Image (cartoon, rainbow, N blue to C red; front, side, top):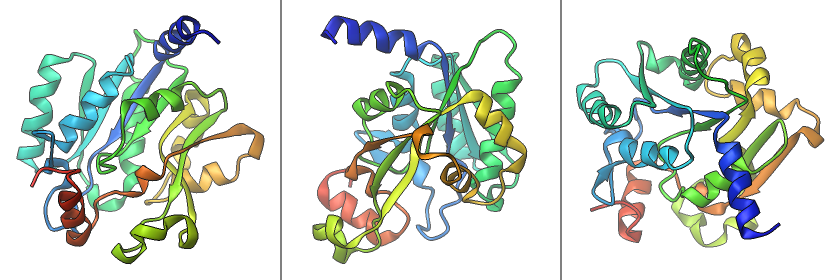
Length: 234
């Protein structure tokens, strides 16, 4: 495929998707809101939403926790600039990721003026996520196109991820919208979506490898390492 044909194909694909950004975690292990960690001078929630904007979606739904005014203020400022950004508040963020995902799906389903074929689902703490990876996910043709990377279990495993860590098939991922709606009522807890994806036939799942996605931020040790590497502002 020529570069021009690839670009035109990607643009056509980018017109039929929405984005759900799961940003309602309360960061208990980290001890501070990961949404407000700073990367390239911007809060992570802003940085990741801007990444989502580069995919030219019809809508971006950002799910945030209740009673976190600083997070709400940051994302509201961005939503004013970009009308495609919609903010949804999860009143019970402690119940798990699946509840936030359900809220995101319900919000997309309420849009009457847009036609959605696929949904890109993202988090906010994979600090090395970039536009090219999202483009690769959206270029996939399967019912689910997920990211594949290794599990970051501890600082001692940074240098030998390929040898000692297990594969994760997870976020960010792109999923057929009708399939997501079918799964909507069965989502529960933190691992509902991953569990459902595992039950799909192998030929319905595409994977995009990117070990940089192993580096998410859940603990003070991981945060310190990310700052040491220059992945987050000190």
